[in-house]
Image (cartoon, rainbow, N blue to C red):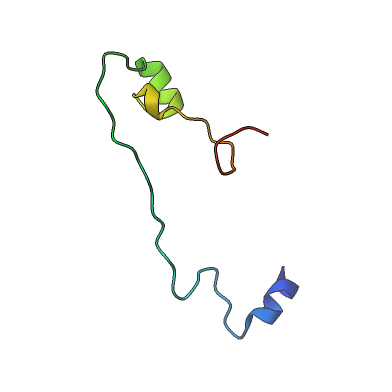
Length: 64
């Protein structure tokens, strides 16, 4: 690892000097009669089924 830091300059740091804040998009939650159970909500991270979307790690949300 030390050899990777040699070309970084005299004082390499793990953080950039001017970090750019991230932006998040969270759709509005529509309250409806169909909600996840408490166990399912804790497992998926949301009470609302419309927000229960799997993350595939690529744009478009389609599995490979």
